[in-house]
Image: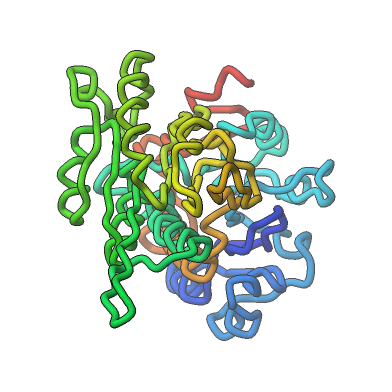
Length: 383
């Protein structure tokens, strides 16, 4: 049974869905693996490394997916109107695994069904103990939080730690992290390691202890509403207009004192909540930096622009696209391991073939299409 690994062609994407290490794992499981030539180059992985691990290198995407039972991607496949029809190449009945972004690409679900592929979206892996090794959102967000602090440091005109010198003392930078999920917590830890004074906010009361355990102070309006501010899946809920007003007032006072603000707040399937207004930016010191990690979902910061570093009233606002791809070597390694763990879940104990339990809660959570139909409950309205 053949597993195919395609090169990523979408803009700003440097990751790859399998590494030589995971190719070895697939070979151990009894699969044949074909990798499109050049698929790993942007992640510092050469064709020769894949060959040494046991993969066959194919010269074209068509040859890569020909006869494949499983097709591995990072991002959703390209359509005919996007320059190359990756979707049209996929064999009927093949299993497509990737971060398919179904909330933002609803039209693709019908395309998967029409093509007859079994589409599985890795962002939908439930946050349960058994699925931790498959949790692509956590693995990628962890790196994003780290990289956000480095990007901020690059744009910031001062040092992070306090430095006492014969010429005088350099004060420490003040960093404020908005959203204490996986990315936010890693941003806190990284900023602390660099010597900054760090504070953070989140609507979930459970985040307070995590933030404080990393040595940061916690900023939050605490009331009865915050007790129900977290979903069963561990994500933040949309808060009421009154709560947003109170929180915005507190944040406005906090932001005035900060040098760097890192925005990480996302709600699955919804536009990113607006956390930093134009007025807040105008209250910040000249030379301050804002990193908006939610820029591709509308942005947490009012003046951020996707794909750009812009300056507003003396504040630099970073809105890079596809942040995990900015640290592609490690992001690919972690993503590939997540996918390999998922493929192992789908495989027969004897190896070499799929034995999918369609009633497994992980499988049900990620399955978008099957047998020519949209099967995921959240997206069946598009069928």
